[in-house]
Amino acid sequence: MDERHAAARLLTIACDAPSASDASLVASSAPAPTRRSLLAGFAKLATGAALVGGVASPLPALAKAATKHHSGASHGHSAAHGNLMHGDWSNARAATRPLSDNRRVLAFNHLHTGEKLKVTYWADGKYLPTALHDVNSILRDWRTNQTIAMDPKLLDLMFQMQHRLHTNETIQVICGYRCPKTNAMLAANSEGVASHSMHMEGKAIDLDLASKPLARIRQVAVELKQGGVGYYPKSNFVHVDTGRVRQWA
Image: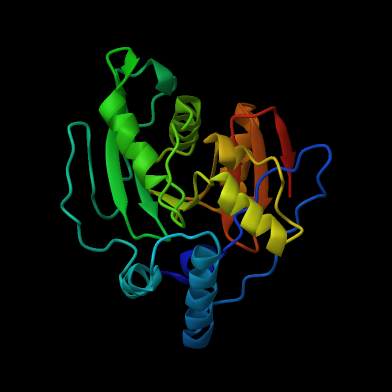
């Protein structure tokens, strides 16, 4: 895994847009990871999981993901409309009006769990329930394993972003859903967490695309004007959500 994503995956607090009553969010500096900083990050993540009664031990999955290359081996899981996969699938045709396509496909790599998913989530004029279930699973709160029905509009937003960027490579996921208990734990340990987070509603994701400059990802999200856009260059991710149109850094 490259330094850009190693730094992002160790970020225990995935930021989102503050409400009118919340303070402005400030992303902390994320230096290039070393063996010592990776181990410290693992310990911090484990502490966060324990505080919210999450998965018994996230360390094996984190250690395994850290030693694998960004385009590691396939996990082999499959479902009716989605399957775990590896690597990119870039250089595909970017349609001028992507939401008119007959099929909408996304691929994810969750940097905290090491799980990967490639899924056709919309086809022949409708969202596919089994595919949405698979998306809900990979974008779950990884600390507690709780899921929520992710907003399909958020998937469409990511799909349109990729088309504008002329890529359909794997989306690197830092944070998807965040349950209220996790959010409360994070808010208690940091001033930079909004008490009313779009992550808690399944309407937000913190992401990166390995082949694209972070500033360009942000620019495209802002141009689409479909929700909130947060820019965190020091932590190597862009936050997008389907709330009101706004932006911050």
